[in-house]
Image 1 (cartoon, rainbow, N blue to C red):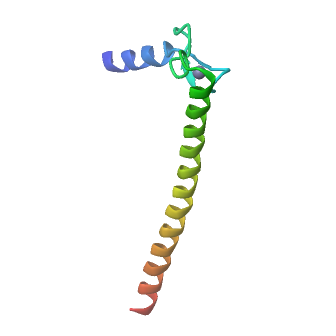
Image 2 (image 1 turned 60 degrees about the vertical axis):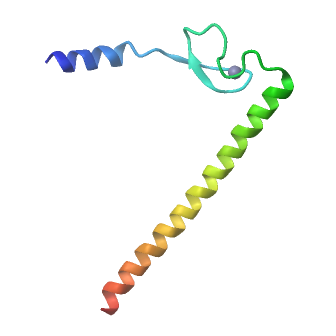
Image 3 (image 1 turned 180 degrees about the vertical axis):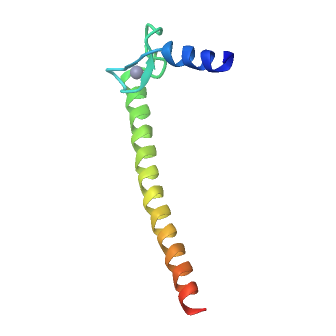
Length: 84
Ligand SMILES: [Zn+2]
């Protein structure tokens, strides 16, 4: 039961996170400053946020394309079973 105890201990001691009011990323409460945007000036911060938004947009479309592809494959497999 040693392993399980360690696992439980790990869960209970999990560090809470706080949200950065500047860039919105999560970081450990142990950090005094946000490691994502500390040291960035406003222009660099804007670039960071723009990159994050672009990433979200790409992920969004990737998800939709994957869904359509999965649907087509499923439709094809169902159709193949039906006809052959
Ligand atoms: Zn930040």
